[in-house]
Every structure is written in C-alpha cells, then in structure tokens.
Length: 343
Image (cartoon, rainbow, N blue to C red; front, top):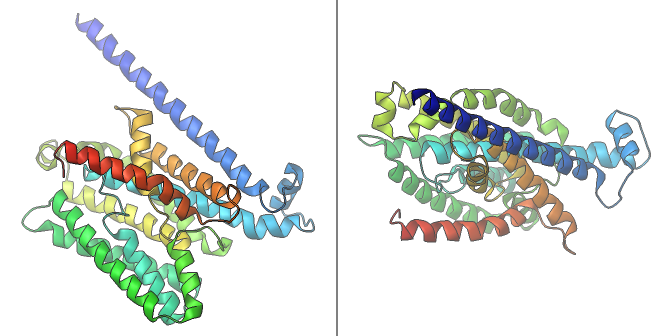
C-alpha cells in the first residue's frame, strides 16, 4: 500500500512536470514567433533573408535602417519589458496572496510614471535622466507603501489599501503636471503614459536587459520560499523561512525590473495583472508559475503591439490594447471576489 501511494504521488508529479515543460515550451515558441513578426512586419514587409542580413550588420538600403533602428529596439524592449512586467506581477500576487496586489494596482508603476512626467514637462530632460529618476521614484514609492503598511505587524490588506491610496494621490499629481505643462510637452507625456514601444532605442535598453538577466535567477531561487509565503506569515515562519528578508529581496528585485521596464516603455496597463493568473491556470499546481508568467508577459506585449499597429486604421500604443484586454478581467475579478466575501 505504501509503495502504491508513493508511485501514485510520483506519477502525479511527473504529469505536472510534463505539463510545466509543455506549457513553457509553447510560450517560448510563441514568443519567438511574435518576435520574428515584430522584425518582419511594418509599413514594408521585408524578406526573411534581408532581415537576417540586416541583423548581422550588412547594409541594405531601406532594410538596415528599418530593422536596426526601429524594429529591433522595439522588439527587444517588448521582450524584456514584457518579461519584467509578467514576472514581477506574479511575484507580488503570490507573495501577497491577492490577485489585486500587482504593481499597477498598488501604485508602484504610478510612482515611476509621476517622476517621468515631471522630467518631461518640467525639467525637459533626456531619456537617460527619465529612466534614472523613474527607477528612483519606483523604489521610493514601494518603500513608503511598505513602511506605512507594516504598523505593529505586516498586513497584506493594509498594503493594498495604502497602495491604492498612494496611486490615487500620484495620479492627481500627474493630472496637475499635465495641466500646468507647456502645450508642446503634453503629447510626449501622454504617449509615454499610455505605455508604448515607439521610440525605443538600443542604447537605452542595457539596464533593463541586465536587470532581467541578473534578477530573474534570484527570484527563481527564492521561488520555493515564495510558495511557502503563500501559506501565511505564521506558517512560513514555523517552516524556517525568514519572511522579512525573503519579502524584501523579492520586492527589491521585482521593483527594480518593474521600474526599469516602466522607464523604457511607460506603464503598459494590466500586463503584470494578467500574466500571473493566466500562467497559474495553464501550469496548474505543484510547480512554480513565475517563468511562464514572464513569457506570458512577453506574448501579451508583443501581440498587443502588433494588434495596435496593424489591426486598425489608426495605430494605437500597446498600453491601450492591453488596457482593453485587462479591464474586463479586472471587473470580473472584483465581482467574483465580492461574491466570495474577499472584498
């Protein structure tokens, strides 16, 4: 009987492992397909061999400029920003045990956005300054939210409520800055706030790329502790997890990626909100859904950008498309949580 139970458990684990591998492989292949589409499609559709030669450095009239200067930076920004949004959103939702506890809802991206708008409309700053100030503001925002939510003990509900309040305050600051700004600065600020891959440049991307490459393994290694944190503060502590240390490392790593992604693309709506739940549903229980959530973030951003560019007569920024997708899910989630008495 004991052997049969062990075999049953091992078989279930193998099935979950196969499911994780299949889902992740499909998401990686889909991300590669969408990345290739980002390079091939545009006002002019170039042959694959011409795009490949342009990527290798050959100078082909028309093709080299379009691929190297416009399409490649746009694709790289979408890949790494999408992965950062998806992974960081899944970390926050898992760690805080609430699907509403993602960087968009609790005000972290809004802090970076307010700082960026200030740089654009008041300081008339360059892209590098905007990126630096956005990252600093993202860290400052999460620090304020975390300090205010601790009290005598850490409270998830308090953190979410304080985050929503901070977000509302920062949105008011953004509205005020837009009202007092010069007329010529408003379009660039609004374009940035909507979340867009337009104007991405390769020389601005290394900080985001490096942060994703370095911080992703840290988050994955802490994934086991993250799963234990889902059991609650007391259970995690009794199992030997240093909850404060683990939470701080996860928050700092996630906020760093989120802030850098926001500084490049603006706050692309609902990607960090949607990626985690979709990944969890596809992967199932028993295995970490963090890496799949990152790739779902990539696919959401790239697919939404392609739809925004080619599905309508007018071209729309990627953030508008993801907002159209994510808003109904947010309403559905709020209704479901209200029925369960979780609100």
